[in-house]
Image (cartoon, rainbow, N blue to C red):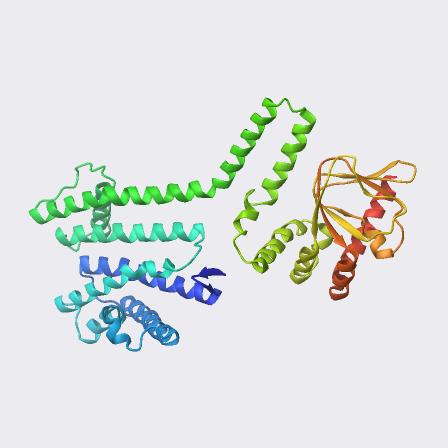
Length: 428
C-alpha cells in the first residue's frame, strides 16, 4: 500500500485514483479533438460521456463526505464555491445533452460550456499531490500522460486557429501534432507555418512555453534516473576511497580482501550504509519494528525458513542478535551446553570434530548450532570462523518459544537437518 499523507492508500483507493486519472486524461484527449474537428455525436460519445459523468459524480460526493468527516468545512458550497462549480461543470454529459436536444453536433453554447470542463483537468495533480512516496513508475506514467495531454491540447489549438476541412482527419491531426512537437522542442523545420496574425501569436506563445516545458520534462526524467542510481554511486565512491586508504597505509592483500568482502556484503544486504541513520530520528518502538524488517531480509534467504509464515519470520527477526567474529575465533566449543544457534549473514565458518578434522564448512545464508537446541545435548563439534563473520544469534529461550507458537519452523529445520546429514554421509 502506498502512503497518502498520514493515511495508507488501500488497493481499492489506489484503483479508484487510477480510474479518476484515466477519466481526466480521456476527457482531455477526446474533448479537445472533438471540439477542434466538430465531430457529430455518435453512440460511443454518449456511452463514454455517461461513464465519465458517473466517475466524476462519485468523486464529487466522495469529496463532500471527506470534508464533512474531517470537519474542514461546515458549508462546502460557500467556502469551496469555485471548486464546486468546476466539479459540477465536469459532471455534465454534454454529448448526451446534444443528442437529446436533437443536435447533430454540439452548438456554440454547449461547446463553450464544455470548454469549462477542461478546468477540471488542471486538478489532475491532486491525485498524486498528497502521496508521501510516489513510486518511480507512477511518476514516469504521470509525466508521460500529462505531456501527451499538453501536446494534444496545443495540436488541437492549432487546428482550431487554422480550420481544416472534414477530409482526411488522421492526416490533418497528424500534421498539427507534428507542428506542436517541432515547435515545443524548438526544432521548427518551417514546413508548417502560421498564415495569419492569430496563428503567429499562438506560435510565439508555444515557442516560449516550449523552452520551459522541454527543460522541465528533461530535468525531471534526468533527476529520477539519477536518484535511482544514487546509492550505487555512493557505494562505488566509498569503495574507491577505501581502496585509496588501503594503498596509502600498505594494508596486506589478505586484509584488503576481507574488508572489501565485508563492504560488498553490506551493499548487498542494505540499501546504503546509512540505514541505521535513516531511522535514528524515529521513536524507539518504530526503530525496532523497522530493524525487524531489515533482519527479515536476511532470513528470507535461509532455506530452512522459506516455508515459514510471515508472522513466524517476524518473530525470528525480533529475537536475532547480531555478532561479529574474527578469523580463527571459536564460536562453539566441544562439550559445552548449547544455548544458541547462529545464522551466517556474511563470511564462513568451519566445523571440526574432536580430532581437529574438518567436517564441513558453512557459508552465508546457512545456519549451525541448532542440533544441541533441538536434541538438548552437549556440543560434539567445534566451530571456528574462517573469515571475518557477521552472525545472528538465536537464543534457546526464544527458539523454544517460537517453535511452540509456530510448529512449521521446527518441521522445516528438522527437514533441513535431515538433508544436511544425508548429504554429509553421501560425501564421506
